[in-house]
Image (cartoon, rainbow, N blue to C red; front, side, top):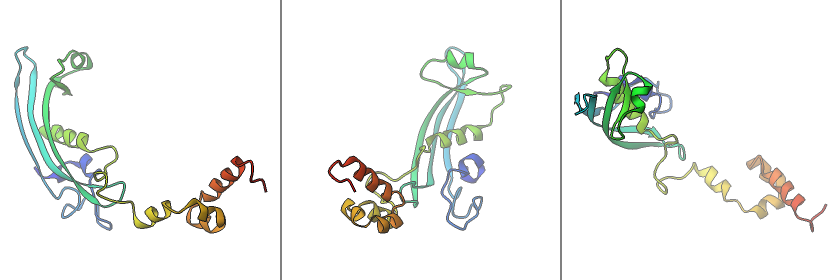
Length: 176
């Protein structure tokens, strides 16, 4: 199933600068999702859905702001429930899936699983990327340079002047 069928997921996916978010040629939704579900009932008569959802999602790394691919391969074991009481009584092997009037849309189930797989703060693995160049260099500027020229440092680091004032205030030997 094409990823473009999932509007909630599209809001989380990478989109090239200058491209419209719903342009599905190269940004969100350019790929597809593979899924497999078996619907039935367990030995206690509960309606169940078991299967898997797999896709490669293009996300924007929140560290370097570049595109990266997140491989999703989620196993699904759900029991269809009609209320919270029924959901709370489920055995631990099942996740509840609330359905109204016993009607369900498998596309909603697939989209829910993909949205849940996206991390709260998407980013490359540690060491695979760096923050944008100017930020990484400026963040490593020696504190001595900031103390020597607080005005110049403040132009690069808006809060550097506060750091100098705090250091001066906390240092009893240095009272101007």
